[in-house]
Length: 112
Length: 118
Image (tube, rainbow over all chains, first blue to last red; front, side, top):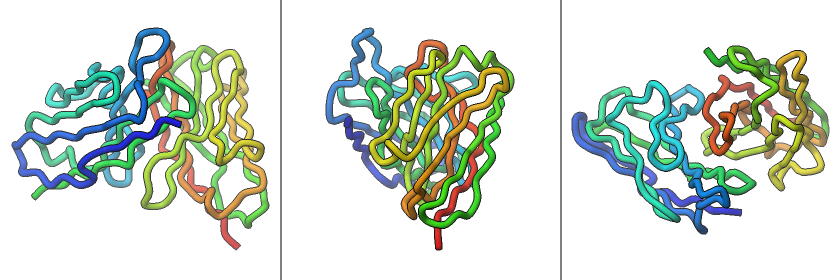
């Protein structure tokens, strides 16, 4: 199974400041079709997960442009350009390049 | 608008069975792969199972042989039959839809809680 490792596991951030979360996979996420199926999910308290970013850097419908994704191969990053109060929650990277789909441990974003 | 509504959760004893349902609307259900993903209380996400539009299925090792995923395209409903339940199956179970090209769980339901306890 592909292991997804996120850092940090907790990120206190000041409102209006940037935030960054890293995700590393135990093997390349490049699929045989040439795509890299690495996504980022946001889970606000008491809510189901919500897709933010897919295929490394594509923003899902309705996601603010302050969220961006980057990376390649085994190393990926989610960046929030200016954190807002509504961004509080847990962020997960996940891969769907190979079964079983796997998730990172989650990174808790909180406001300082 | 895509809607996924799970039901069927509850409190069961170890060794018992439960069937979860997920009613889909807002898209042509039969054309899309669907997943079950669970989240134990206070823990992270764990993928459970997938069923493709063509009926291909796959399972996490932790549930293989005990859980069965299925779909009724005429009823726009996804199912998860869970047998021989264990305490470690206690979790909120979410159904999640993939896009036509696959490769991501793009829409999620609100989840249904399964508690396995004596």
